[in-house]
Image (cartoon, rainbow, N blue to C red; front, side):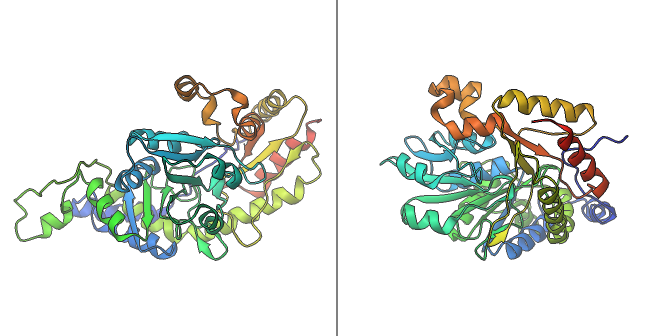
Length: 380
């Protein structure tokens, strides 16, 4: 019996053909295919600018650095998210301030965010966790115009809420193209913004701080001269091989999300009578990207029972994962800031009881039925 993976990237002949372009020209680093990928991504997500990067983590770092975040600044982040959300703040020498989540959405709590704002707060990073958009409009209304409002949209390519695409109305957003995401370039990320100054600075910082890109220099009147460097920058450029793959993957994004939404609906219908399992819900007025289908085990034994369920499914050849982790429990952050597990109770509960079950664009209905039957056999 085949093993059902938690996630599988969906790549085909189109992507294989696409990489022949940069291979044929010999231009493998950031170039015309990356530019096309950026242009198409920006159009779909209704943003003025898009900059491709080596990963979502570097996109997060880039948007913070280009916005002037630095030592002495506080940046609010959710306590239940992938570690890179907080790490990017530390990369800038700023201080991450953790906030608990809403258990219904797993996204950052607006009420708790408001409580953590101080005179040192420079920005808030919300996370569209598992592909469900945060209500950016409401956050902006409540937080006011002075704080920078950033979006970690790693899981949310193609998602929307209230008519706004992920990343379209925050000050800047970062997306991921890791293989567990709906579209992939292997590794890779994208920074989006409507702010021309932030985009200009980020574009230079992405390329070591150079005043012009390598492509512009080589196509210019004096390709033999090196550019001027007036900023401290990084090497966060995406390769044209990845860009070529991204162009093809982006063409499939809408269809990928439609398929994932059908799978999510099937799970919701078939698992609704499992009384020890809380299921994720769709937004009333939006599109969930369904990067993952994250359930929550409701049981008096909490983490112990969740782990037992995961072990049972593993023995049945079905992969599962915790939703993500509560950062305040991780050794580096717990040791550095002296956090206690109960400091963020909803994040602690999500850390101990969430369980992602397989959902991806190569999942079959028979695969889903195996997952559903395995879960229904577990006695709560």
